[in-house]
Image (cartoon, rainbow, N blue to C red; front, side, top):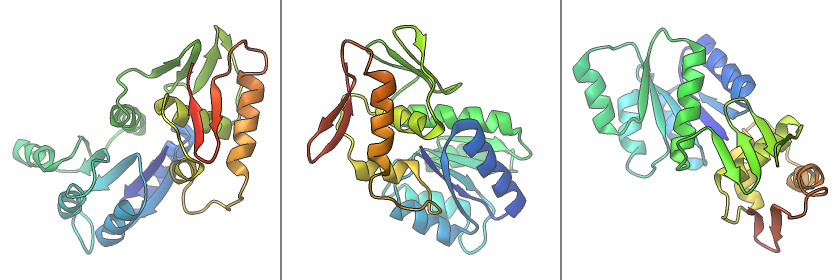
Length: 222
């Protein structure tokens, strides 16, 4: 999953980004003002936007309003305002959830995971495809009751495919949702991870779960 953090407090933005990367395995981009944040949110495919309200150049409420004109990406607002009217106005503008500063990073991470699931149409943390279970809470994987050890990137690829189970996912879509701006692009990186997943998930099983749709991408299905 790929997340955009729009926050002008550099230390807070770094702490949030690190928590998302280490605690959830998300790819994270950071914008330090509202104008850059809105441009990035409208130019890239994100699974979640974390938005501060007090931003330079363009305030968070304006960013949210403009973003909602073209996107339904889940938005979690960071705010120091605890007045009832302000929170109601945020939710009516299109925010999906909010946390009040100062906040606990563990709570923020849990809310982020819930919003990502909700944005993918899932309410429970465990994704099931046939006898495969992907636990998004602790990032564990089981097939037919047996735990399968994956690398961090193998898990991220599988998790995204599980969220999109039954749909064809192109290599471009995977790249857009699994990497931030800092990654070094290699043409066959997705193929490498898919190969590793097949070896661990499918080689000893009677039925394959990961299928290649020639010229289109990959599909995870029973």
